[in-house]
Length: 350
Image (tube, rainbow, N blue to C red; front, side):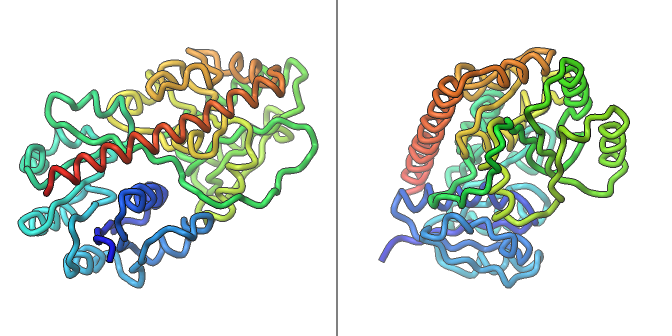
Protein backbone atom coordinates (compact mmCIF):
# COMPACT_ATOMS: atom_id res chain seq x y z
CA UNK A 1 0.00 0.00 0.00
CA UNK A 2 1.30 3.42 -0.89
CA UNK A 3 1.24 6.11 1.80
CA UNK A 4 -1.70 8.47 1.40
CA UNK A 5 -1.85 12.24 1.43
CA UNK A 6 -4.62 14.71 0.63
CA UNK A 7 -4.96 17.88 -1.41
CA UNK A 8 -7.82 20.26 -0.61
CA UNK A 9 -9.24 22.95 -2.91
CA UNK A 10 -12.55 24.44 -1.82
CA UNK A 11 -12.48 27.38 -4.24
CA UNK A 12 -13.46 27.30 -7.90
CA UNK A 13 -9.94 28.04 -9.13
CA UNK A 14 -6.27 27.00 -9.05
CA UNK A 15 -6.99 23.52 -10.37
CA UNK A 16 -3.93 23.67 -12.65
CA UNK A 17 -1.83 24.08 -9.50
CA UNK A 18 -3.07 20.92 -7.79
CA UNK A 19 -2.68 19.01 -11.05
CA UNK A 20 1.09 19.54 -10.96
CA UNK A 21 1.23 18.85 -7.24
CA UNK A 22 -0.47 15.47 -7.71
CA UNK A 23 2.24 14.57 -10.21
CA UNK A 24 5.01 15.65 -7.83
CA UNK A 25 3.53 13.69 -4.91
CA UNK A 26 3.16 10.62 -7.12
CA UNK A 27 6.87 10.97 -7.94
CA UNK A 28 7.55 10.88 -4.22
CA UNK A 29 5.58 7.64 -3.85
CA UNK A 30 2.23 8.92 -2.54
CA UNK A 31 -1.31 8.09 -3.50
CA UNK A 32 -3.24 11.37 -3.49
CA UNK A 33 -6.81 11.95 -2.43
CA UNK A 34 -8.09 15.20 -3.90
CA UNK A 35 -11.07 16.98 -2.33
CA UNK A 36 -12.46 19.70 -4.56
CA UNK A 37 -15.62 21.27 -5.95
CA UNK A 38 -17.99 20.07 -8.63
CA UNK A 39 -17.02 22.98 -10.90
CA UNK A 40 -13.31 22.15 -10.77
CA UNK A 41 -13.92 18.52 -11.63
CA UNK A 42 -16.23 19.24 -14.55
CA UNK A 43 -13.64 21.54 -16.17
CA UNK A 44 -11.48 18.38 -16.12
CA UNK A 45 -7.92 19.50 -15.58
CA UNK A 46 -6.95 15.81 -15.75
CA UNK A 47 -7.98 15.46 -19.40
CA UNK A 48 -4.36 15.06 -20.59
CA UNK A 49 -3.00 13.54 -17.37
CA UNK A 50 -5.24 10.52 -16.89
CA UNK A 51 -2.49 8.23 -15.56
CA UNK A 52 -1.94 10.11 -12.30
CA UNK A 53 -2.48 8.10 -9.10
CA UNK A 54 -5.27 10.19 -7.64
CA UNK A 55 -8.72 9.60 -6.17
CA UNK A 56 -10.91 12.65 -6.75
CA UNK A 57 -13.73 13.46 -4.30
CA UNK A 58 -15.73 16.11 -6.11
CA UNK A 59 -19.44 15.66 -5.46
CA UNK A 60 -19.08 18.28 -2.78
CA UNK A 61 -20.37 21.76 -2.13
CA UNK A 62 -17.86 24.50 -1.40
CA UNK A 63 -18.67 24.36 2.32
CA UNK A 64 -18.27 20.56 2.52
CA UNK A 65 -14.82 20.16 0.95
CA UNK A 66 -12.82 21.04 4.06
CA UNK A 67 -14.94 18.82 6.32
CA UNK A 68 -14.65 15.86 3.96
CA UNK A 69 -10.86 16.13 3.86
CA UNK A 70 -10.66 16.26 7.65
CA UNK A 71 -12.48 12.92 7.98
CA UNK A 72 -9.71 10.92 6.31
CA UNK A 73 -6.42 9.61 7.68
CA UNK A 74 -3.50 11.05 5.74
CA UNK A 75 0.21 11.48 6.37
CA UNK A 76 -0.19 15.16 5.54
CA UNK A 77 -2.66 17.52 3.88
CA UNK A 78 -1.89 20.08 1.18
CA UNK A 79 -4.13 23.15 1.11
CA UNK A 80 -4.02 24.14 -2.56
CA UNK A 81 -5.24 27.64 -1.64
CA UNK A 82 -4.32 28.48 1.95
CA UNK A 83 -6.34 31.67 2.05
CA UNK A 84 -9.63 32.70 3.60
CA UNK A 85 -10.99 32.48 7.14
CA UNK A 86 -12.64 29.07 6.75
CA UNK A 87 -9.50 27.54 5.25
CA UNK A 88 -7.23 28.90 7.97
CA UNK A 89 -9.66 27.67 10.63
CA UNK A 90 -9.56 24.20 9.06
CA UNK A 91 -5.77 24.35 9.10
CA UNK A 92 -5.76 25.20 12.82
CA UNK A 93 -8.00 22.24 13.63
CA UNK A 94 -6.17 19.79 11.39
CA UNK A 95 -2.60 20.66 12.36
CA UNK A 96 -2.89 19.13 15.81
CA UNK A 97 -3.12 15.65 14.28
CA UNK A 98 -1.83 16.04 10.71
CA UNK A 99 1.01 18.09 9.20
CA UNK A 100 -0.07 20.59 6.55
CA UNK A 101 1.42 22.35 3.55
CA UNK A 102 -0.33 25.58 2.57
CA UNK A 103 -0.06 27.20 -0.87
CA UNK A 104 -0.26 30.97 -0.47
CA UNK A 105 -1.04 32.59 -3.82
CA UNK A 106 -0.73 36.15 -2.53
CA UNK A 107 2.27 36.25 -0.22
CA UNK A 108 1.48 39.83 0.82
CA UNK A 109 -1.11 38.24 3.13
CA UNK A 110 1.70 36.78 5.25
CA UNK A 111 2.65 40.30 6.33
CA UNK A 112 -0.73 42.02 6.29
CA UNK A 113 -2.94 39.41 7.97
CA UNK A 114 -2.09 38.42 11.57
CA UNK A 115 -4.00 35.13 11.23
CA UNK A 116 -1.00 33.66 9.40
CA UNK A 117 1.36 34.33 12.32
CA UNK A 118 0.75 31.01 14.06
CA UNK A 119 1.61 29.07 10.88
CA UNK A 120 4.87 30.80 9.93
CA UNK A 121 7.14 28.77 12.21
CA UNK A 122 4.90 25.89 13.23
CA UNK A 123 6.83 22.61 13.15
CA UNK A 124 3.89 20.81 11.53
CA UNK A 125 3.33 23.39 8.81
CA UNK A 126 5.20 24.56 5.70
CA UNK A 127 3.89 27.34 3.56
CA UNK A 128 4.49 27.26 -0.19
CA UNK A 129 4.64 29.94 -2.88
CA UNK A 130 4.62 29.57 -6.66
CA UNK A 131 7.69 31.44 -7.87
CA UNK A 132 11.30 31.83 -6.68
CA UNK A 133 11.21 35.62 -6.46
CA UNK A 134 8.20 35.41 -4.12
CA UNK A 135 10.08 33.02 -1.87
CA UNK A 136 12.98 35.46 -1.69
CA UNK A 137 10.65 38.37 -0.91
CA UNK A 138 9.32 36.67 2.25
CA UNK A 139 12.55 34.93 3.33
CA UNK A 140 12.84 37.22 6.36
CA UNK A 141 9.58 35.93 7.87
CA UNK A 142 9.39 32.26 6.82
CA UNK A 143 11.26 29.58 4.93
CA UNK A 144 8.60 28.86 2.31
CA UNK A 145 8.70 26.11 -0.25
CA UNK A 146 8.77 27.11 -3.91
CA UNK A 147 6.58 24.75 -5.96
CA UNK A 148 6.31 26.15 -9.47
CA UNK A 149 3.19 24.95 -11.32
CA UNK A 150 3.86 24.00 -14.94
CA UNK A 151 0.37 23.17 -16.30
CA UNK A 152 1.26 19.49 -16.15
CA UNK A 153 0.31 17.01 -18.90
CA UNK A 154 1.75 13.59 -19.72
CA UNK A 155 -0.23 12.76 -22.88
CA UNK A 156 0.21 14.30 -26.34
CA UNK A 157 -2.44 16.80 -27.35
CA UNK A 158 -4.26 16.23 -30.65
CA UNK A 159 -2.88 18.44 -33.41
CA UNK A 160 -5.34 21.22 -34.14
CA UNK A 161 -3.24 24.13 -35.33
CA UNK A 162 -3.93 25.46 -38.87
CA UNK A 163 -0.94 25.13 -41.20
CA UNK A 164 -1.17 28.65 -42.57
CA UNK A 165 2.31 29.87 -41.69
CA UNK A 166 1.05 32.48 -39.23
CA UNK A 167 2.81 33.01 -35.92
CA UNK A 168 0.50 32.77 -32.93
CA UNK A 169 0.75 34.73 -29.70
CA UNK A 170 -1.46 33.80 -26.74
CA UNK A 171 -2.72 35.93 -23.85
CA UNK A 172 -3.93 33.17 -21.56
CA UNK A 173 -6.23 33.25 -18.55
CA UNK A 174 -9.33 35.26 -17.71
CA UNK A 175 -9.62 38.70 -19.31
CA UNK A 176 -8.87 41.02 -16.40
CA UNK A 177 -7.21 44.44 -16.65
CA UNK A 178 -6.10 44.08 -13.02
CA UNK A 179 -3.97 41.11 -14.11
CA UNK A 180 -2.75 42.15 -17.56
CA UNK A 181 -1.78 45.29 -19.42
CA UNK A 182 -4.07 45.12 -22.45
CA UNK A 183 -3.40 48.74 -23.42
CA UNK A 184 0.26 47.85 -24.00
CA UNK A 185 -0.88 45.07 -26.33
CA UNK A 186 -3.08 47.47 -28.31
CA UNK A 187 -0.19 49.87 -28.85
CA UNK A 188 2.12 47.06 -29.95
CA UNK A 189 -0.46 45.70 -32.38
CA UNK A 190 -0.96 49.17 -33.80
CA UNK A 191 2.77 49.59 -34.42
CA UNK A 192 3.08 46.19 -36.08
CA UNK A 193 0.01 46.76 -38.24
CA UNK A 194 1.30 50.19 -39.33
CA UNK A 195 4.50 48.44 -40.47
CA UNK A 196 2.43 46.12 -42.66
CA UNK A 197 2.99 43.03 -40.53
CA UNK A 198 -0.02 40.72 -40.74
CA UNK A 199 1.35 37.16 -40.74
CA UNK A 200 0.39 36.59 -37.15
CA UNK A 201 -2.54 36.57 -34.77
CA UNK A 202 -3.04 37.07 -31.05
CA UNK A 203 -5.34 34.69 -29.20
CA UNK A 204 -6.92 36.60 -26.32
CA UNK A 205 -8.49 34.20 -23.85
CA UNK A 206 -11.24 35.04 -21.40
CA UNK A 207 -13.82 36.73 -23.60
CA UNK A 208 -16.79 37.90 -21.51
CA UNK A 209 -19.38 40.65 -21.24
CA UNK A 210 -17.54 42.91 -18.78
CA UNK A 211 -17.13 46.65 -19.51
CA UNK A 212 -13.34 46.21 -19.68
CA UNK A 213 -13.59 43.51 -22.30
CA UNK A 214 -16.15 45.43 -24.35
CA UNK A 215 -13.88 48.47 -24.28
CA UNK A 216 -10.90 46.42 -25.47
CA UNK A 217 -12.90 44.69 -28.19
CA UNK A 218 -14.29 48.03 -29.34
CA UNK A 219 -10.82 49.55 -29.52
CA UNK A 220 -9.53 46.59 -31.53
CA UNK A 221 -12.34 47.15 -34.04
CA UNK A 222 -11.93 50.94 -34.12
CA UNK A 223 -8.24 50.66 -34.92
CA UNK A 224 -8.80 48.10 -37.66
CA UNK A 225 -6.91 45.40 -35.76
CA UNK A 226 -9.68 42.77 -35.78
CA UNK A 227 -7.92 40.56 -38.39
CA UNK A 228 -5.03 40.16 -35.95
CA UNK A 229 -7.05 39.21 -32.84
CA UNK A 230 -9.10 36.13 -31.99
CA UNK A 231 -10.92 35.34 -28.76
CA UNK A 232 -11.74 32.34 -26.60
CA UNK A 233 -14.61 32.48 -24.13
CA UNK A 234 -14.09 32.66 -20.40
CA UNK A 235 -14.66 29.39 -18.57
CA UNK A 236 -13.78 26.92 -21.34
CA UNK A 237 -12.82 23.45 -20.18
CA UNK A 238 -9.23 22.26 -20.03
CA UNK A 239 -9.50 20.26 -23.26
CA UNK A 240 -10.02 23.49 -25.23
CA UNK A 241 -7.74 25.53 -22.97
CA UNK A 242 -4.78 23.19 -23.40
CA UNK A 243 -5.37 22.98 -27.15
CA UNK A 244 -5.16 26.78 -27.39
CA UNK A 245 -1.94 26.85 -25.39
CA UNK A 246 -0.44 24.02 -27.38
CA UNK A 247 -1.26 25.80 -30.64
CA UNK A 248 0.62 28.96 -29.66
CA UNK A 249 4.20 29.88 -30.50
CA UNK A 250 4.56 32.62 -27.90
CA UNK A 251 2.98 33.49 -24.54
CA UNK A 252 2.29 37.14 -23.61
CA UNK A 253 2.12 37.68 -19.81
CA UNK A 254 1.45 41.45 -20.27
CA UNK A 255 2.69 42.49 -16.84
CA UNK A 256 5.33 45.05 -15.93
CA UNK A 257 6.83 46.34 -12.68
CA UNK A 258 4.96 49.65 -12.97
CA UNK A 259 1.61 48.37 -14.22
CA UNK A 260 1.40 45.24 -12.04
CA UNK A 261 4.01 45.45 -9.26
CA UNK A 262 2.48 42.57 -7.25
CA UNK A 263 3.71 40.09 -9.88
CA UNK A 264 7.25 41.30 -9.28
CA UNK A 265 7.05 40.99 -5.50
CA UNK A 266 4.44 38.76 -3.87
CA UNK A 267 2.51 36.95 -6.62
CA UNK A 268 3.34 34.56 -9.45
CA UNK A 269 1.82 34.91 -12.90
CA UNK A 270 0.16 31.86 -14.42
CA UNK A 271 1.33 32.98 -17.87
CA UNK A 272 4.94 32.08 -17.07
CA UNK A 273 3.80 28.73 -15.64
CA UNK A 274 1.84 28.08 -18.84
CA UNK A 275 4.85 29.00 -20.99
CA UNK A 276 7.06 26.59 -19.04
CA UNK A 277 4.45 23.82 -19.03
CA UNK A 278 3.91 23.91 -22.78
CA UNK A 279 7.47 24.88 -23.78
CA UNK A 280 6.23 28.08 -25.43
CA UNK A 281 8.46 31.11 -25.77
CA UNK A 282 7.58 34.00 -23.44
CA UNK A 283 7.40 37.56 -24.76
CA UNK A 284 8.02 39.04 -21.34
CA UNK A 285 9.34 41.93 -19.35
CA UNK A 286 13.08 41.34 -18.97
CA UNK A 287 12.94 41.36 -15.19
CA UNK A 288 10.07 38.86 -15.11
CA UNK A 289 11.94 36.47 -17.41
CA UNK A 290 14.97 36.79 -15.14
CA UNK A 291 12.97 35.73 -12.09
CA UNK A 292 12.44 32.32 -13.74
CA UNK A 293 15.92 32.07 -15.25
CA UNK A 294 14.45 32.34 -18.75
CA UNK A 295 16.23 35.41 -20.14
CA UNK A 296 17.92 33.42 -22.92
CA UNK A 297 14.77 31.48 -23.81
CA UNK A 298 12.50 34.53 -24.07
CA UNK A 299 12.07 37.62 -26.21
CA UNK A 300 12.24 40.40 -23.65
CA UNK A 301 11.50 44.11 -23.40
CA UNK A 302 11.50 46.88 -20.84
CA UNK A 303 8.91 49.34 -22.14
CA UNK A 304 8.48 48.49 -25.83
CA UNK A 305 6.43 45.32 -26.27
CA UNK A 306 6.31 45.85 -30.04
CA UNK A 307 10.08 45.49 -30.29
CA UNK A 308 9.99 42.06 -28.64
CA UNK A 309 7.05 40.89 -30.77
CA UNK A 310 8.86 42.17 -33.87
CA UNK A 311 11.99 40.21 -32.93
CA UNK A 312 9.90 37.09 -32.35
CA UNK A 313 8.22 37.43 -35.75
CA UNK A 314 11.60 37.90 -37.45
CA UNK A 315 13.21 34.92 -35.71
CA UNK A 316 14.22 31.86 -37.70
CA UNK A 317 12.64 28.43 -37.27
CA UNK A 318 15.96 27.20 -35.88
CA UNK A 319 16.06 29.91 -33.23
CA UNK A 320 12.49 29.23 -32.18
CA UNK A 321 13.18 25.50 -31.88
CA UNK A 322 16.25 26.20 -29.77
CA UNK A 323 14.27 28.41 -27.41
CA UNK A 324 11.43 25.92 -27.20
CA UNK A 325 13.95 23.23 -26.29
CA UNK A 326 15.31 25.55 -23.61
CA UNK A 327 11.77 25.97 -22.26
CA UNK A 328 11.32 22.19 -22.20
CA UNK A 329 14.51 21.86 -20.14
CA UNK A 330 13.21 24.57 -17.81
CA UNK A 331 10.02 22.57 -17.33
CA UNK A 332 11.97 19.54 -16.21
CA UNK A 333 14.24 21.66 -14.04
CA UNK A 334 11.30 23.26 -12.21
CA UNK A 335 9.55 19.91 -11.74
CA UNK A 336 12.72 18.39 -10.29
CA UNK A 337 13.38 21.32 -7.96
CA UNK A 338 9.75 21.42 -6.79
CA UNK A 339 9.87 17.67 -6.04
CA UNK A 340 13.13 18.10 -4.14
CA UNK A 341 11.65 20.82 -1.94
CA UNK A 342 8.49 18.86 -1.26
CA UNK A 343 10.53 15.77 -0.35
CA UNK A 344 12.59 17.80 2.12
CA UNK A 345 9.52 19.35 3.74
CA UNK A 346 7.73 16.01 4.11
CA UNK A 347 10.81 14.39 5.61
CA UNK A 348 10.95 17.13 8.24
CA UNK A 349 7.40 16.26 9.37
CA UNK A 350 8.48 12.74 10.38
